[in-house]
Every structure is written in C-alpha cells, then in structure tokens.
Length: 113
Length: 113
Image (cartoon, rainbow over all chains, first blue to last red; front, side, top):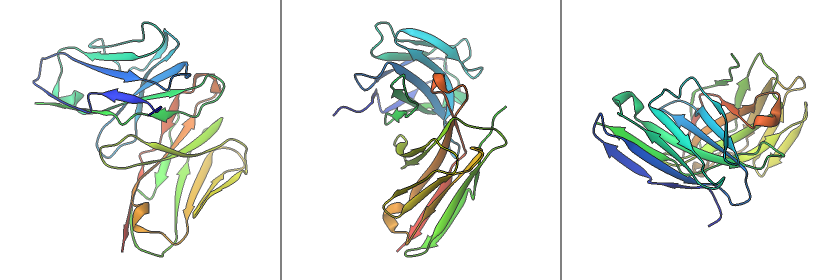
C-alpha cells in the first residue's frame, strides 16, 4: 500500500496523559499536513511541513501540541496533558510541492475520558 | 477569515434521484478539491478544479468551479446507495504555494434503496 498511513487508528486515554500519533506520508511527497476534525465538521488545519521544516502552525495548535518531522519522512504529533476537548479525529495528509492535491490517511480517532 | 459554506448540510434522497451540493465563499481560491469521507475514515480525493468555469465529470458526478473561483458545485445523477457519505469541499488558500486547505463543514448524503 503506497498511501498515507497513520498509527494508531484509535486511541483512548485518560485526561492528563500524553499521547503521540505517527504519520507516514506517500514516499515522494515532501509536504505533510496535520488536520483535526470534530464530529459534524470539516477538517481544520493544524500545521504543515515542507521536508523537515515546520512552516506554519494554526492558532488551534496550543503549546500542549507539538509536531515533528525529523528526517523529512514520517511525522509525529504529540499532545501533552490531554483534555476532553482534544477528543477528535486527527488526520494527516501529504502532497507534492508543485501542486496542492492532498491525500489523506485514515486518521487517528482520539477519545479523552 | 476565509470560509467555505456548504449547502445543504444534510440530504436524504431515494435511489435514482439527482442532487446538487453547493460550496460558496466570498474569497477567491487557487483551486478547489472535493472529497468524500466515510465514517471513521479519512477523506478520499474525488477531483481538483483549478480554472474558473471548469467542469469535470467522474462517472455520475459532475463538478463545476465558478467563473470567479469563489464557488463550486457537485451534481450527482441517479444517486445510488453507494454514494452515501460525507462530501467535503476544500479550497487552496492563495498564494497556493503552501497547499493549506480550508474545508467546508460538509454535506452528509444518505441515499435510500
């Protein structure tokens, strides 16, 4: 399978715990995006990378959130001290630099209890 | 703030009927993409439109980009139960180099057999 891969698919955590999600983009894609989607809404942009550089962060990305893409390949999104309001689907997408067609992974569904 | 308004938000129709979903904004977009999303899965790209006035067809689905690149529509002919899902429009924010997408809130389509 050469699509965008996300792990885990589902995560249930207790409030206050830290969680980390992983995204493996399509191999030749140098851009990687993180979005968050809550029930009944469209995805909202969180941040994006071009290769290993994080070029933009949304105001939605509080200081409890951190994203990395250390070698310009896979990316991780960490949420520290989770809150119930963090419950959502976290989506990763990748694209080539020369166009804007973004391909999404299957997402990680986070539930904070 | 750039917003994409989708209408209707919910649509329940009988198999064989036709339908149109609208995506409107007061802002100009470099390109616009339509996605379909099933519960618990990531959005799947259907089409990208780039040129004002452009029309693209994908089997029974017809996509149109407005002349001013501020709006788009998705028309489905003779809907089938397999068309059931969440349809999302997403615009690339100018300048288009970032690939960042603004999503509409989605249209939930249910096609009854």
